Amino acid sequence: MALRTETIQAVVIADYDQTPQVEWVELEDPGPGEVRVRIHAAGVCHSDWHAVTGTLPLPMPMVLGHEASGTVTQVGSDVARVAVGDRVVVTWVPVCGHCFWCLNGAPELCEAANRGAVDGTGADGHTPLRWRGQPLHRFSWSGTLATAAVVPESAVVRIGPDMPWRDAALLGCAVQTGVGAALRAPIVPGDTVAVLGLGGVGQNVVQGARIAGAARIIGVDPIDWKRDLARELGATDTVDASEDVLTALLDLTDGRGVDVAFEAVGHVPLMALAFNAVRRGGTAVMVGVPEPNAEVSLNAFAFPSQEKTLTGSWLGGSHPARDIPRLEALWRSGQLKLAPLTSHTYALHEVPKALNDLLTGRVARPVVVFSDAEAPATRAPTSVPGQVGEE
Image (cartoon, rainbow, N blue to C red; front, side, top):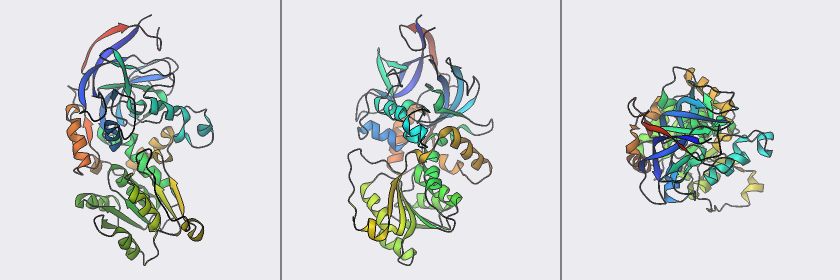
């Protein structure tokens, strides 16, 4: 039988370096193992900008967005974990559960999830979106800067009935990535930690370090209000990034260096700085996403002679089905603060402004919030030929 589609509004980037535009696009009903989510709030990330510029060389055209909160409105066959009416967080690493990495304790590196993110399609090479009669890719399985999205069941996690939509949206990426990186790192209660870059992810690294028991957390950023926000979220000290940061960090630690340093921007010089700022036997964690072909130069002698460790963190080493409920519990206990991160909200058509505000440092994490009038914006269902999800 023909596959049903519905016309929704979505933020589309037609090609690299073009301005994202709100367009009417066709969204198919969910197929086997998929769910349809009405989006209520969606975060805007630097990774979205990397897709716009081609720094992340993803297929075009594409619907942006990869972290959101919303309501399940339809489920495909073989869906068991969620039901229509559930309030959920949408995340961007839908684990398959059976590849090498999933079976060996690293689901954030899931082979199927990575392949789909690169291809802009599902596991079968199909996308549920079309625009102007052509397939329309979705950013990292999600495409959440839209009034609705069809995603794998493993990309959604239920949340409680009272969690604000705009706060919950950040659990999809920024909070998992930042808090997860800190909780996964070898932070021992009483340690001194440095966080280089205080955007949406870096602020959550600060929170994660506080939750992990770090006694001293040094936030580094060139923007005053971001340093102030970091103090609100748990930083004990801050350093202006326009200064000599390495000297400042060494001075704050009596010349020893910090126990753990996090780079949360994806800027190559900061990666080297994080490594150089850790003490002997310390650990530098790369959380920010650089250009795919970027290279960093480090002193090789420091590895054996100082026993330093350099490691990376992808989505904070998170398993969404396990960790999003834990993050919600931390929020409910007051240990995880989300409202200060979501002070700036935008309408869907304001995504270009949200991206500009993000790039110019006016906001840590822009959040698109749909009003009751906007969120259901659809046109009448139609039927088109198709394979996936046919009845």
